[in-house]
Image (tube, rainbow, N blue to C red; front, top):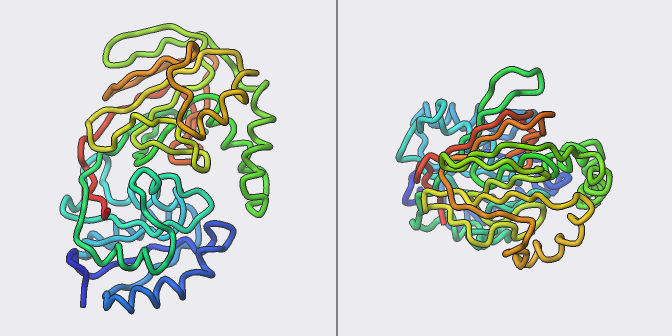
Length: 307
């Protein structure tokens, strides 16, 4: 039988989580069959193939897509479900079988990572319409570009950490990000930056900008405990303290206890823009996209998520 949302198309990144996804697929597919679910599988082999697979599935009438992998896989599938900022199929449902090295998106919704629990979850009918972020930026060649994101975007220090972590082999695991954080701490610029939040501008020495739709990033760091994915607002945080103090905040961020803080200004906003000089890196959902200038806005309740 099919699920309440129709037959499923599993879009799988078998290399996610240092190959863990590929190894756990037999257990997941057995569990799905055990629930009597109808599905097929598309495995990706390179960048943006998950986006292409999502678009093709929707164009062929499939309305239940399941991203199997980490946050990067979810990021690509979400982008593939839209043509620019318009949903290709507004009635489509996104399920997530979290199995990669970074699975922060699902933490906000309390979704499990055990294959049998995932299969039972995907067989259910409960959904939630969530907001989707849009970021416009300059790509690494300096050309205007845009991307959607479901979880969290960053400008500055956090994006630099992601860029540096990508230089190391994936088998380093979280150690990649610790090394990246250490090497980025004194090399990230702290430029005077005018940030405009809902038409109100403020000039600050910017180290880090967080634009959060959901609550977690960086491997279970609860950076945005007040973010709600369906309220039509980003949780926006500007960190303007000394770069050397970032490490002292880390453990508090893991627990979601870093707010309020004298060096962090927090907003609830549907739009954010900034033009620092020099330019700062931009990342979304753990993927380095390009550089500033950048503008962020929301698509309210534009994505139907299986919960």
